[in-house]
Length: 96
Image (cartoon, rainbow, N blue to C red):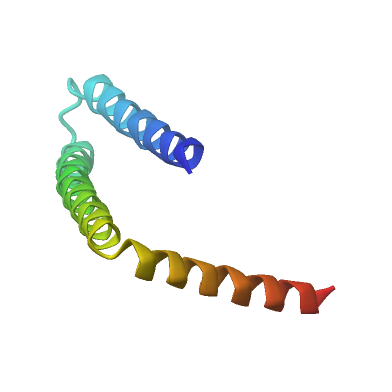
């Protein structure tokens, strides 16, 4: 899970770096189409940062809520985990 998270974070960081490099490389060009494309790219980067921040906040809040529920009801959590594991094991064993 951490590997996928790190890969996604790395890819998004590379995308942002590439976009900022493109913005810097086209800063001296004053053609109307380039200026409009730069404005849209800058706007998209800002929206992306906002969405990323919201997603991160929701994920952290969800993890904290899950942690609290598991701490409040450890035996229920173990029972649910056992049940889900048994059901998945049953379903996967039937495939073969």
